[in-house]
Length: 364
Image (cartoon, rainbow, N blue to C red; front, side, top):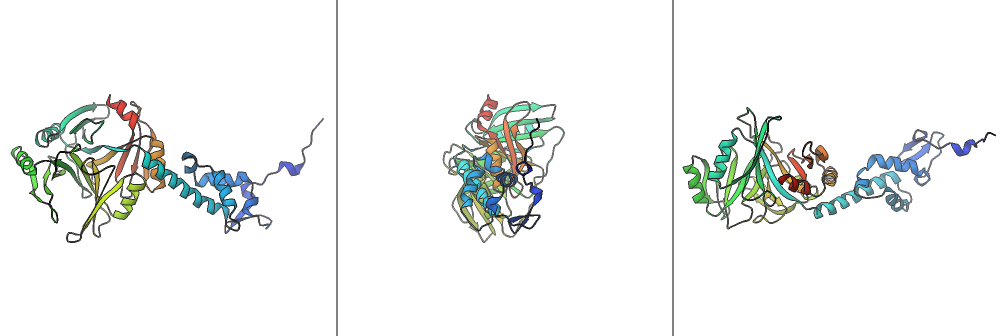
């Protein structure tokens, strides 16, 4: 016996059978439909294409639909998208603030690895922590700093086989090193043949004694006179085109704290110090805005900063939510299985986030 299914129960409206005008759908026959009469499958398919972040941060579209359903007379889809974006951002902000983040190392390229190691160890008092050579990729890394990598911010030097010179550009500023006696450090650097570009003395408009030097590749280092500190490698200065935009991004996407700002109208620049703890105990990011300058040449010498995170996948979603660009989707690196994700800030500065547990395993 053949069972015949009534036609009325077997036909479901498809997306193509509706027209949307001013947020209110209607059928091809001109019959207006309230948003609350749309098939739930249709609504969910529309939501799924616009707010994929919801599922990642544990937000359910059905909850938002129920909340928005009580707002009679408002276009449902637009309201749900706005509400979902706000809810996702709020959830991401909460997670980012709780994430265990720390600045791990700064990466840049040099033309002679042995020469740079000699200068940093003899003139700046750093220790060579480890080296790794990757002949199949034709490069060598050297890690230097003032303490072990699992607790200190360090430098990762990269030497690419056969390349002895790079363009530092105008965007990168300097690294900061805290020393107990700037004048004594400068004399040592001079004795070793180092280049001093600013003699020791108080900073303009302040009392902190500073000096500037250059390493053999032309990277600038600011020496700051301080008492004993657990983090002598204390600053990375980068220039940005919109300071307010950068502060907002690093607070929300990176979970950094705005530690202080200083405006110097006489010399037409403003700086913002940002990091994961006070300047005297942690490495910080110094963002510099020069009045009226919105774009810089980044060259090809400076590479990136690496930051530890508990979850590279959630980190990538938060970066996307707050205006960053993901340049490497989160996942394990081939060969060592360390999970990372890479991104660009609004000025194009690159940062790599590294899984905290994987990073410690890699050090072992």
